[in-house]
Amino acid sequence: QVQLVESGGGLVQPGGSLRLSCAASGTFFFSLYAMTWYRQAAGKERELVARITANDMTTYADSVKGRFTISRDNAKTAAYLQMNSLKTEDTAVYFCNAERRRYGLDYWGKGTLVTVSS
Image 1: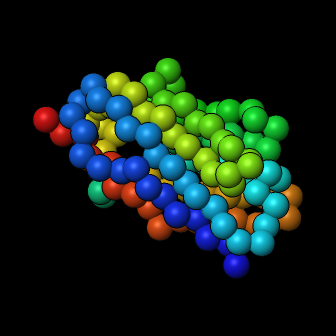
Image 2: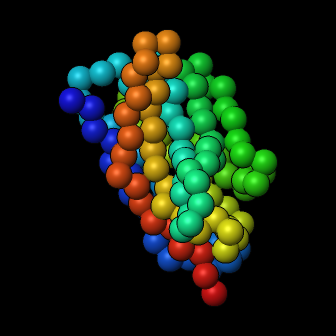
Image 3: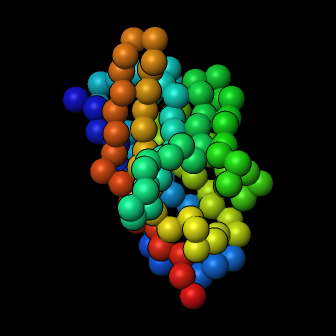
């Protein structure tokens, strides 16, 4: 089975930074999967935050562009989300996703809570 475990969430003040980690394990070819961070705020739908493909192409939501950076380390089978200049609007549960769309493969972590508050 494939497991994704997020970590690094917590309470931070506006303007602060956090680095989220997604550790992947199991029998799958991590390097062939696109890794995506999603988030879901209370009362809202899940939204895409950032994605990095198997070829290291990145995509960001407009709301986080210039503030967040997604990266991956295939040797460690991990993905990261560096979040800078955090805003209260960034408060949400952040989920890690691994997807190999061509083969209909999709895995999710359980999420880590990020709270941005003064």
